[in-house]
Image 1 (spheres, rainbow, N blue to C red):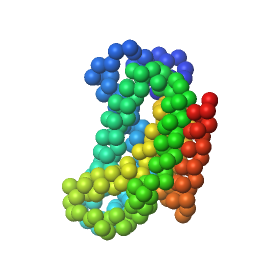
Image 2: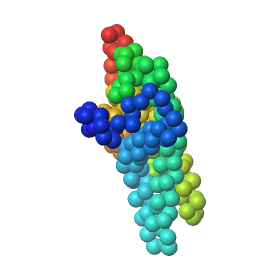
Image 3: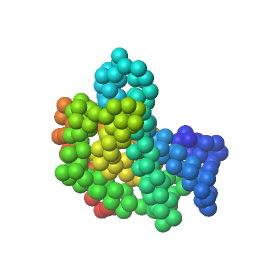
Length: 220
């Protein structure tokens, strides 16, 4: 879809080029966001899924429970995708985003960058990031049996992950929703924050850079 959007715009992205949005096309837009969020965020949940799978390796239906855990995690990001869809349509109606799903004004880009940067320094960000960086502690403290329990654990982990990364995901509105370079960069950065030994320091570093970049964008 991204390749077509920056190409002939007659293939997978053609449905985006419309003036009136009905329920079906809003559903397609939500699907786009949900698939994108799954692709971007599921890699960061891999340590949790593997720890859970190892812990249930000798039990019956262990694979089913792993899928239930992943489903709970993705459910959270699917819900976030509803909010992202509504936000995109609102920004498009205000003509702050183009049909190419890119910002039409540096004011929008600057505001999103500054908000995302400030959030990197908040106590909520630090608390959620700490939980995301400790999948073993999460399993030990919140363990629940059965497929239903696995789904609920995935849901809870997804909520912590959402609290950690929602502002970073909003950067798609600043760099272009279908910009594959931005998507790859955000995916990589989420992995750095959650998996690297210096993830917490890295979060504050990127926060400062985002604020600086946002003010430079506003000065334009």
